[in-house]
Length: 171
Length: 68
Image (cartoon, chains in turn red, brown):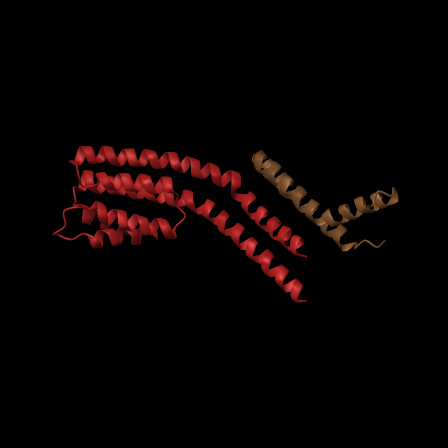
């Protein structure tokens, strides 16, 4: 009886792990798409409305879905008048976001790279940097989509099979 | 000589599961991992039957009076 229960626990755990991995594969392209949208909105706010960065970030956070909305909200809230650099704030919040969400190192690096240029240049240069970041995100998006299609289903079934395998080994 | 039959079923189960993992990995284009999983399965089964095989060799030696 206790053997059966333990086997069920082991299989359940490995199924959960497989599902978690598959969910990450599904969610990563979604988040990259959100980031792309956010950068496009930011571009419009900076180039056409000519707002300050704080107001632009607020505008972005109002127009995109969670959890990116809170990310941009936090960054905007952290900007104070007596500060002369935006990058430390940006870096801190991107790191926190990276730890609890299914984006990869590549995506994080692109965002950090972009953060380094934010607020350092005039409008035309800034627009170029935003375009560059969007292009880079496009590339990782393609890769993430590809991975999702190739390994999405595999992760789930391999999770179940490895659970059964471990139970058989311990039997 | 009585062999514990449950170990046979266990090995059969491991074989089936390893074959399934192999097929899935191969379908997804991860040939090298598929080969690796097969190898690991083989090694694990070998460890299971190691005692029996050593028994077998002892028997053969004793049949031909080679036991020291």
